[in-house]
Length: 250
Image (cartoon, rainbow, N blue to C red; front, side, top):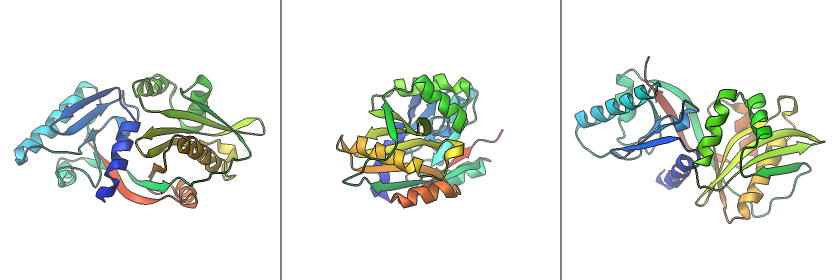
């Protein structure tokens, strides 16, 4: 399992937050409420053996999120420290949310071009954001946060749109960190699903990453999303490790 620690680090780096604080080995992230990934505690290291020290750290995290008018959220992975943090949060009334799986695959040595036209931009242009709002439920009020969080990141990334027969049919984000291509927000137009457009877009992101010497890819999928799981399995992705969130009770 420790072999996937670099994947977790890449995922942490690739989806940034507008605010990040360090607290005794934990990273405490806030992003104006946009996505749990960037509005949660990433407890990868824990310094301090005493149980009361752990409870104090949790309380300090809760105070941080109170100041941002959000509930405290902790991301729980196989790399969480201390290992019993999940049970401690459960005793405090934290509920489980969004159980998910990280999947990984090698990028093929040769990736054939598809039939559609793939447009890659290094910034999320207005038309790209409009499609994300329309297809994936991004709120108009979240657009500024989405743009700002990537403006704060130095990592190479692209915002992709696939066109077929003159119209946009799929979009996604690719981010490079170290040896990994992370895929995010892979979405197909609702009336174009089941036609292979998402797979073609992902292969286009493979080519972009391979040109930069990157040979591994990962993504995150919510448990139970059968269409997405089937698509990624066909592309060669395999389960690496699970994760979930613990959300503070109201």
